[in-house]
Image (cartoon, rainbow, N blue to C red; front, side):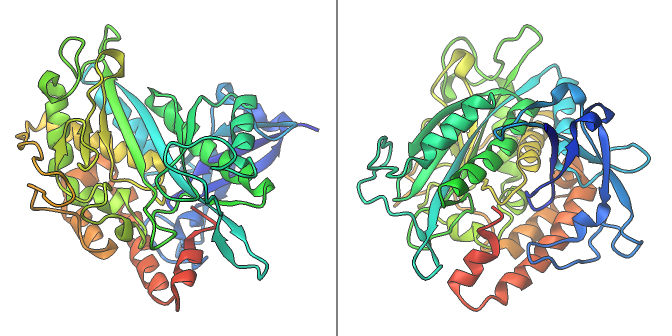
Length: 429
């Protein structure tokens, strides 16, 4: 019996949803409690702004476009991504997908269509004989590795097969720098469709890995002594003629940047510290966001330089793009992309000055003198203070986010060990 799986991404980057009879597919709407936005990872119910926690936990609507229903990776199942609306039909201000649609619309009014490509990094864990989670052992692995030494049980082969069956545009899988760490890249494309694919693919990858008894986690720093997991947001724009508008001619790199791309980079630099409060929204995010870590710590930019936060690719033509390297997967990917696009747009419309490129190597020398906040609390302070960015993204979303994340800081602080702090997140991110 075929069924429909309806999902939407919440403030914690959890895939909220329902299984529904396939006969309901064309209805395009179901209801949930708006109290979803009152909940922490620890399942505490809090009076967060916009949650209606003290107003009876009333309904909201989860709406989807029936034309966007697609094949699932699960047999006899269709799947669709929706977004949250109030019961009067208007988009809910806390909804990340709605924030992304607004960001796309804002750019379209400027004659530009955003294109997005997202790279995801993850660690594989398995349970030992005592029932404790341990990193998956891949002693023969190395960065850019393929084959059984890098994945002895072939769980990434299972992910690739499931992605092909369900039509996901998976472009590559490879091993990352550290043992048991993997990278997944989906094809560059129209912004909303690309982020929908990333949201669903992350769910697919975690569910398929579980079939191999692997807990696949995208959390930013699950192993203290190893490198972190990032989410790299690559973006460009197509003009009215369908041409890539961030480079002059067919070349790439800083020497070929258009005024549009210079404004985008200037915006990302200007709003750097506030962006950390939304793109790196877990306590562990700031174990990853450190100097000399290629993680997006510094308020800087450059060309083909992996130690800067905003990297201008040397590729030109259709592949010309700007890469922002700060985010991690504890953030809602719709909110992440909306925030990057809005910070970039503010740089263009407000005519921010573009600072000089980073001249240091990023490890021993850095010309930038400003980094992100020392922890999530400081980053949230920067986010609250940056009213231009908050209003551009969605003030209702930011207010809810800050409230929930301040509570999360207290919950994680109460964890009695490093493993307990890891396990607070690991089954959700």
